[in-house]
Length: 340
Image (cartoon, rainbow, N blue to C red; front, top):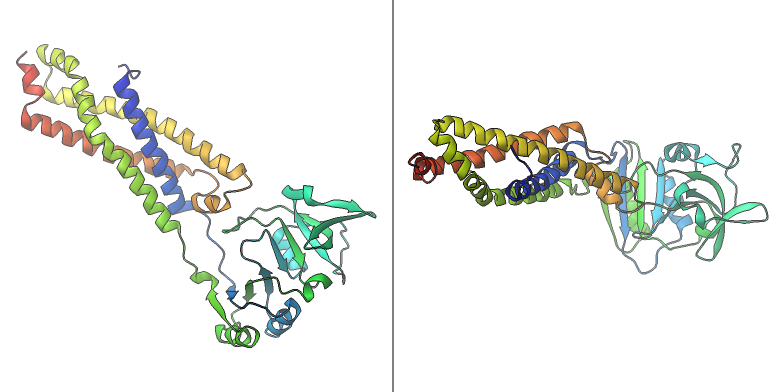
């Protein structure tokens, strides 16, 4: 059996692209990361021209025994958070001074991947932000993907330079089960003229739409096989005629076609899996495309490979079987060549 010919190569390309898309879809559907929503969390988006100061916001919300509060401005690469041992443990911060205690000064922690923004002065490691210098107290490695954008650094919420700042429009609040939406709404009404609020778990999960689009693309690619499989079967007409002339039955011819089609699928599976692994590894290694990492996962799971194989076998065999059936029904190949 010769796999290296123009018709087989085109069929392999069509099938490997289908397998590649199906594997990404299966991986996103079954193994993509989900945001942890165990905490009672709310997102508040301010819609006022002038916000109250960060210090006032923190004081008002802290009255409700919050676990954490953070502020950011749209898709900015920084976030203002409450520096605490629990937060440092969550971010896996490596402290410059292991005996660190929060001080009444401008402080920040920086993503290890962006150390180039740090400079040294008077024996301190510093970064600049909005005209102020922040003392870098530690570094963290971003193991968890932000669904919107990776954070380059975090600023301490009690830094003197941010207390009177009003440069934010998004507030994230985390609390335990005692934190009620009504309380948060009441405080927000006192602080802001206009605002919108959502429970973080109510955010729309776009993975379902993503998976649907991927599978739709896969089926569109496979749909191209309908016409090409007919050409592939016709391409075998010389071999079919010879086998029929020497006494091969229609059943043997059909079995032969299915076996060869299976071999083409196996080659396509190998190439499609290599392609999907390469793409996922690239997305994992790059500093951008964080949303893509969340959607498709950090690696291709073996179950996704197995599912794509089963799916392409089912689709391919159905198309091939339907095509052969139509050939039988129209007597366009088998009977024609039996008369040769």
